[in-house]
Length: 284
Ligand code: GDP
Image (cartoon, rainbow, N blue to C red):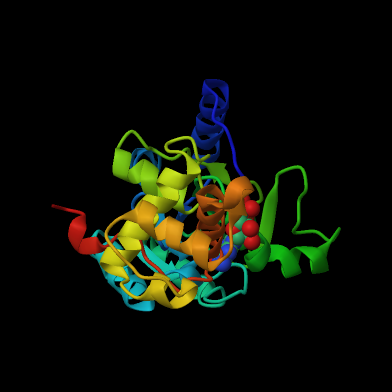
């Protein structure tokens, strides 16, 4: 799940993206619904200029519904088509086909005026590692793929997956590397487990997340772990360790174990649906 970026990887990923993007009409960009801006790489706007653009708020099952809707408005105002999806369970996937046609209607109209009829829209999926690109491609195309197997329409060499008569999808997603020069962006990427816990150690990371939750989702930690909440993240980790009997030799509380447990609960949605950034903080 974790990955390490080397400059070579990044250069190669970028070069592949530049090549592939020439072949397509539509960029389908996956972002994590819990951090829709911090999980983007803004370079995609330059790479994908002159292309139709669709943003998918993926893992929307892990984010707060009210915030998902606010983020949809936010991106729509900026001119993107937007859909919230849960690629793991298939939620929102059905509506994608209609949205693709809508997002590409200018291109389809241009084709029509030139007398080109029935040329399928070509699309590619892009996003940072672990955002759910493969899961999404499988959800959208998996069954179609499996069914069509060796039949025409699935041209292995060309790597196009024919979704229906109107849409073809590049089978390999474009990888964007996250941009985390900004401390707060790095923190949020670390909370969701998208970058190695190298920004901060596990305890510091969990302590900070506890403080965020106490501030924005007051009551969640108290209820889950039966602890007293406070604005001191380390104190809350101590409390979690106590309540969950995380002990090390000498009867000390094992706050590292508590930190891992708490981060794991958060990442798997066991603390409930939580959004980590909000549209009204963005353009400030
Ligand atoms: P990729 O690196 O972008 O191709 O990401 P993957 O498709 O490998 O997904 C990374 C992890 O996220 C996997 O454990 C998936 O099961 C999980 N995942 C993907 N989409 C969703 C979603 O919509 N909701 C939830 N809860 N998990 C998801």
